[in-house]
Image 1 (cartoon, rainbow, N blue to C red):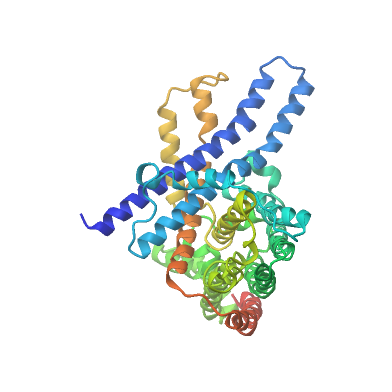
Image 2: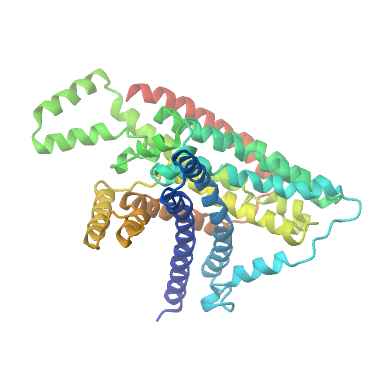
Length: 461
């Protein structure tokens, strides 16, 4: 067998095993807290009001439990995924000693970091030095909550975090981590750490503007800030995805389909609309171009926001030793490390939901077919509505629609993660002056021009 194919197969097997562990553990924890425990309380003979209150409290805790279980396991997988993917891209083997095919390498690394000595440098501000990694990490936990509703298809256990202004909340929380970086760099009493922290602040200010403008463009087309509604508007058709102009091309496709089907009434209705808007087809194509460029701008700004190569100037080893976290060790360094990979996952999740249709399948009928197939399998199992019976357990654990949505959002998000790793393996680091010039002289003006163009084009479609 070709060695490259063999290594790709091992990487794919490792990915499937880790993702099964991650999302199996998350869903089992959510089910235990949000479904099984309330059912147990209701069956215990407790007074109705008390049992209802306890059940509501447990259901409200489900999103927090999901994030608390997901973040550490996912970060361990993403570290291993990056190391193995980088090895694959650069024709190396990568970590393959600890566990089968290196499956447990990052678990061993995590244990090592937790037991390392925690050192506070002489002359450092101890309080701020300790608080910095916490402030850097905390937004990763609370900022991802509204995305759970969109990722799960607005499942009843996550409806409590479905905010009407969900994406605004996520973007507001995402601006906090840079405060932790600046605090850590200043409190370390180290010139390299301080320079890295100041670079991070300048970089965040520069690239957050085009990133936010790209999200504003999607919200403009969707007419809402609710991430669930934005994802649902991209359902059932590849052409209704925001990256393809938010449905701008869909009426023209419907005209062709109606013509092929011989539906003269629908053809005449659409043609009357086209006569009122003669520039519609041209504007629709331009909208698609604008949206694809906005997607590229978002990916670029997201890499800069989470300090990924080629925008990792705050951590430039060749210039700043390790940047803002030079003086950190032990569990504090582990928290910084954990937050960086969590932030990468969060920005890829936002891209999947806002631009790529979230948990909806890319082709019409694919999602419905998958859901019906899984539902048919469940119907073949011995069922019972009696609480705590095997049938009740299976049906409460497996929801075909939720499984389908989870599958697609996982596929899209981790594909973007792999793409970010590929960028790291491919591109060199910018100089600081090139980074700032690229942000202020190119991305920001381009984003503003595209947003204005999209606003006018939208009226012509």
